[in-house]
Image 1 (cartoon, rainbow, N blue to C red):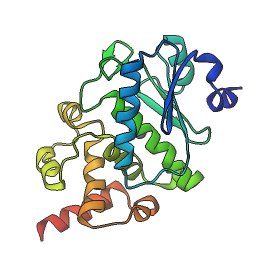
Image 2 (image 1 turned 90 degrees about the vertical axis):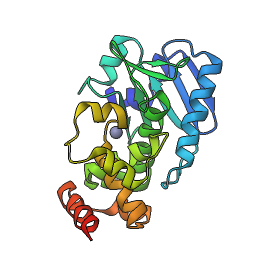
Image 3 (image 1 turned 180 degrees about the horizontal axis):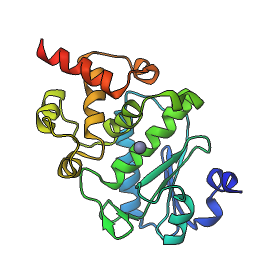
Image 4 (image 1 turned 180 degrees about the vertical axis):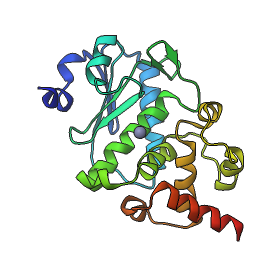
Length: 223
Ligand SMILES: [Zn+2]
């Protein structure tokens, strides 16, 4: 029952708007100007991705009402978004299309964690599934989440800039607020793609643990 629901949730979402590759569905009316801006922003972020989409259409569902949010986020209510790769669908907790902000329970997200960031982040997970299938589960978390964050972030800092901003502080909350949810994972992805010149396939296939990846980056910085 639940598998069918995540692959084909449309009956629970009365409103939709589609532009380009992405169609957004919502349980509340989608204002046309804000909705179109959101879809264009998300698509623009995805176009800068080193990982090219294979699919022609992605479906993103906004679960504003609490009961829908509980239904689709049943395993963990904390994340703002979820990508069910096998169903090819992504779910976002609440959205304010007029302001481009994520509304999660009573909390309103602030830039750089905009609604477009969240959309590009979750769709990047779907595209990763397209490329890897179930092998996605062998991709280390830093590469899987770091890539999605790298794609979703509007102002992508250069490696040195992000490294110096993060310093040695281990992922504290103010840093997360300012630089997005996975700044350290994004730093690693930025390093391997931009400094080491890895092709995207190498990132998809890597089995380095976060500790190993960090060590390579750290040793390299000393030279
Ligand atoms: Zn994610």
